[in-house]
Length: 247
Ligand SMILES: NC(=O)c1ccc[n+]([C@@H]2O[C@H](COP(=O)([O-])OP(=O)(O)OC[C@H]3O[C@@H](n4cnc5c(N)ncnc54)[C@H](OP(=O)(O)O)[C@@H]3O)[C@@H](O)[C@H]2O)c1
Image 1 (cartoon, helix red, strand yellow):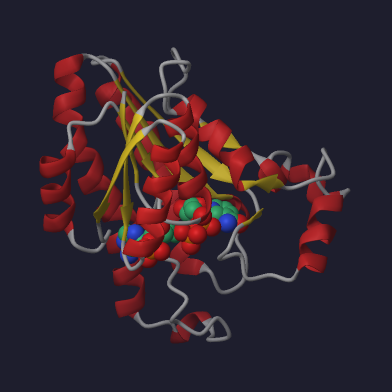
Image 2 (cartoon, helix red, strand yellow):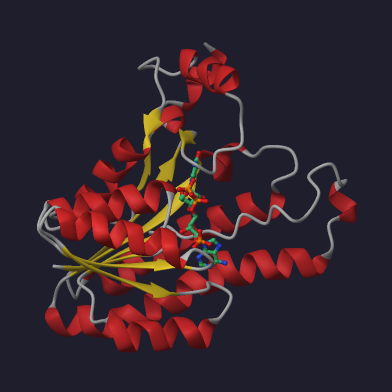
C-alpha cells in the first residue's frame, strides 16, 4: 500500500509513519515547518528497510494540497493527522473576544483542508475499489475544554465528515473513520508530567497512550486489516471511556 500520513514530521504522525513503514508499506509523510524533522523520520523508515518520502503540505493552502496529492499520489490510505493547533490565539481570551478571523483560519485549515485532501485522494481510491481514510480527532471534540473553541469545533466537524463520507465512498471500497485520540505525551504536549499522571489515574487502564499506541490504532484503521468498519468514531486512551472522568 502507499500511505499518506499528514503531519508525519513529529509526534503521533511520525510514530504512525514509522509503524506503516515497519509493516512494509510505502509511506509519504507531510510536514509544514519542519523539513529536517520530516527527513529524519524518512531516514528512520529507510534504515528499517522501508520506503518513504517527505513532502510539504499546509492545510490552509488548498491548491497546495491538490498539487501535493497529484505529484506524490495515488494513495491507498490516508491518515489525516496534521493539525493547526492555533496556539497563537491567547487561551485566556473570553469567548466573545476570539476574532472571527481566527475561527475562519482554524476551520479553513482543520476542516476544509481535510475536505480538500479527501476530495483529492478519492478518485484514485474509487478507481481501484479500495481506500482507507482516517481522520484524527481529539477527546476535546466531544468533551470541550475552556478556550479551545476553534480547535474542538474543527475536530467535531471531522466526525460529521467521516459519517457522511463513509456513505458517499463506501460503495467504492473506501472506509472512513475517526480516531478520537486522548491525551498523548509527544514532543509537542505542553503539559507537565505530573498533570499527565493525574489524568492517567482516572482512565480505565490507568495509563495514557504513547504515540506508538495511537499509531497502532491508526495502522489498523488505515489498512486492509480493517475490513468493514466505517463511519465510526473510535475513542482511545484517556478518551476511551469518558465516564472515567467521574471515577
Ligand atoms: N498529543 C495529544 O495529546 C493529542 C490529543 C488529542 C488529539 N491529538 C491529535 O493528534 C494529531 C497529532 O498530534 P501531535 O500531538 O502528534 O501533534 P504535533 O506533534 O504538534 O504534530 C503536528 C503535525 O502537524 C503539522 N502541522 C502543523 N500545522 C500544520 C498546518 N497548518 N498544515 C499542515 N500541517 C501542519 C506539523 O508539521 P511541522 O512540525 O513540520 O510544522 C506536525 O507534523 C493532531 O490531529 C491532534 O489534534 C493529539
